[in-house]
Image 1 (cartoon, helix red, strand yellow):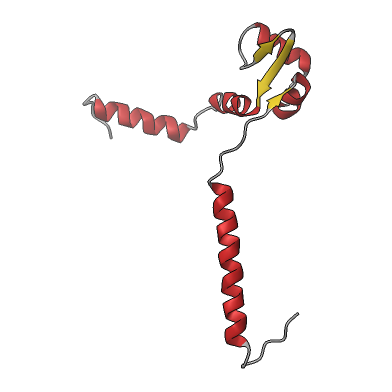
Image 2 (image 1 turned 60 degrees about the vertical axis):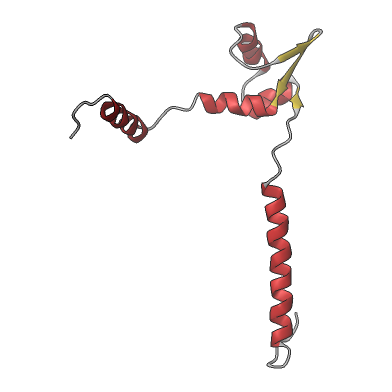
Length: 112
């Protein structure tokens, strides 16, 4: 560790700001990059969404899960699976209440 003195303090602060700028640039570049999609096998898809292959086969047969088929092989998009899971999110009571209030206001009804 470098020992800081009154004489080398301005240089140390300058070095610190340079390192901080580099860190911010790296973090900023990572944030702007969209997540790359991956094709997953049925086993990998099962690990991602915590379902067994037989359960996934059942969902595929009912077209309830997004998938691609090439020949006899099934493939699953990681991004599509995550989006599919998010679509099943249940709204909170507060979200439902806000939507109801907005609906009533738009329709001209009275609201407390």
